[in-house]
Image 1: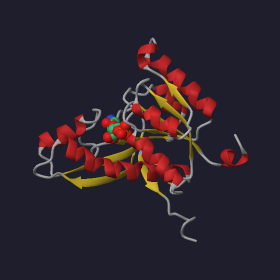
Image 2: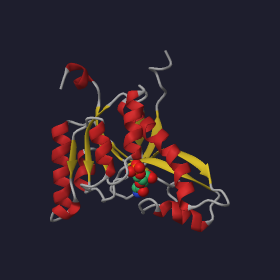
Image 3: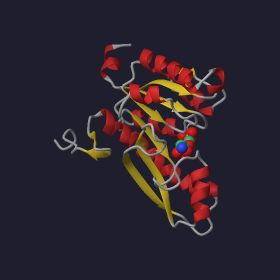
Image 4: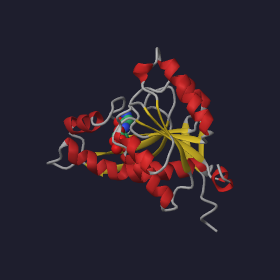
Length: 217
Ligand code: GAR
């Protein structure tokens, strides 16, 4: 690690699939909107396309496949070992499918963000494209995405940011998901920047954003 790298906050991104949110994080870093470096990408699947995106950007990768471990706690220990070795400051769950073991959440209190493709607390609990399909089935007229702090309660941690999109009459799961994804790609890097710059404060189970004193000058 060179001197410049050690000054830049390190993040880990946990993935299981396509990796479009991981790609958005790399783009935000390259454009100077997110002051961070992706020190590690952990995938729960060895065949996740997200791993190719990570390698294209020269990021270190680790596969922690739940099947290879006797319990969620053992997989959690492997994740903690990898995160510790990479000395990460924060973690983003970007389409990470397994439920994270409590030990990981306890090791990084208020330092783990998750992006979910619904306006939480609506349509919590499932993995894409389930929340989008459930929103369509319920006939809601607005959907969107949520970035929240990861706590032991799945999809129920403090909400950091949300973006709403309209649900159109002729939407399919694919068209609605694509509209939501545009907002995910904007919100996840933005909220990571808030977290790493110290602007995000968690009090009484609620997330608050302190004024941006750096850009204001
Ligand atoms: C995203 O839509 C994300 O919100 C969702 O998985 C997709 C991952 O896409 N996450 C969840 O459903 C979490 N419950 P990506 O691999 O292209 O970033």
